[in-house]
Image 1 (cartoon, one colour):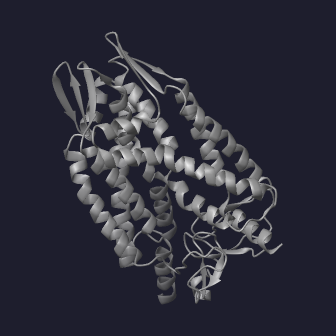
Image 2: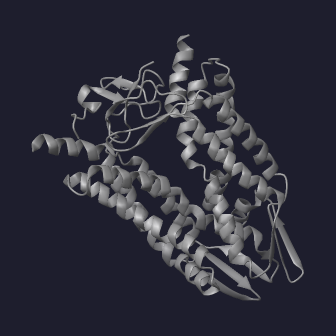
Image 3: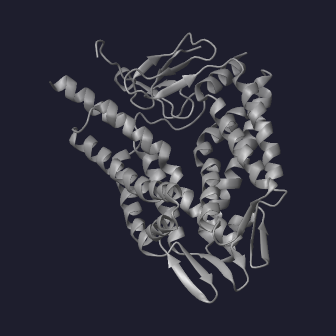
Length: 208
Length: 202
């Protein structure tokens, strides 16, 4: 970078996260919209880490227990998230299997790992290039809600497939734990403050 | 009009003054999207919002999907999707699904309507800023486009077991999801608040 980067915090300013207004850091409430002002999100790393650990704990039952049951002609078949993917592959529906695998397996675990990595990289002030880490954070933030696909599928099938004793789909307990994982990782992404990546970067540049 | 903002991705001070109609600005340091200026932003948002409201009403008035096998048939409306989870006593998932696909999107649309009607006419009202806050806080929690993918996946999963047909409500909801996404993305956070401030001063 040719020209020295000037952050708002170094000028005694804080940007309101709700209305983008620039206010003096001595103020606690945004003069324009009245939202609480934080130069950096409060205890961002600790809160993100706490939410990530919660999500990891919920991730276990979400994958071990069945997300739905199919009762047909008196026999019951339970399917887990991964089981559902395998079933779709066996049915020959590769594109759909890929979508479910991407949204229900890759995205949640990838999000958890990315956020753990980002928290670690800020703590240690090392890791990839800051711009790349910002990019990773934005992707994590954007992609979060797409993991809800599987929960919606269970809701639709449970409502639709309801033919007396012939064929019934029932939701399983993993549907609840899995929606918990999705919501809590979305909150974790929202709690993480990507400006901390750049604070460390500025510190490192000043140090060297 | 103040033209300097702090990038919310990296806190860099960026001057975004002098944007012409249709131009957008991103942070030069971290690449975060900052703002897009459109002269007709409010009437554009209003148009998509009204279309989305009409489509949402349609989506709730007809059958959504129907399913037939061995002579038995079952048709469901949109609202029966979360209601089924409720009947199976998975209450939390029922509430979550109802909120993400219906309640939050409907609330966002109501707020957008109440916000953009006065803004597109240049009228200031004291409660507009609380509406704007509500819109920007809740819009991330609407999952209408995710639900559409969910419907498509469900159809493929059961296509072999039975005959599934898409009702009018499905098409209405798909069009609603498109209009909703366009409405939310046409309202620029920075421009909205700058306009509110200018109108309040005037």
